Length: 184
Image 1 (spheres, rainbow, N blue to C red):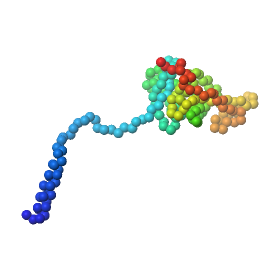
Image 2: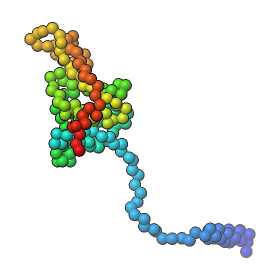
Image 3: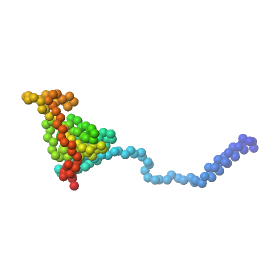
Image 4: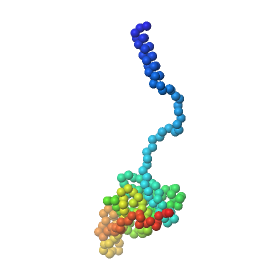
């Protein structure tokens, strides 16, 4: 036997002994349910819809870092198909909104000057707004023409209002102001 062959035999024996000496016996495939799937948690938030004249909380996707986004989404999208089928609706859908802004924990909703704002609509906006992180109170702000009398007020532009237009800001409100409108 040559040295090279002897080395190979010894190496094979050592490898075999080390491989079997660890005490782990080989097993077959063990079934333990479905394969693992990576999932990412989707942040949720609460907004309010109306059913039977009362506010009902519903869960929606949250937009971290943009607390006004949930209200924008509710205004733009309204209730989902399932929510409509459950008899829910949104008075906010009928409001012409110019801006929704957040500053120092106060959410301000600027809306069209001639739009009527009912108590139920206010409750929906205030409770949906204050359900968002970092928003403590909500106020509504209505554009109004207070300029000189004329047959027709100047054209309205909320980014650059012409002279005579002013923003009438309501008082700050919180959801507890509308406790009687909450669904039981």
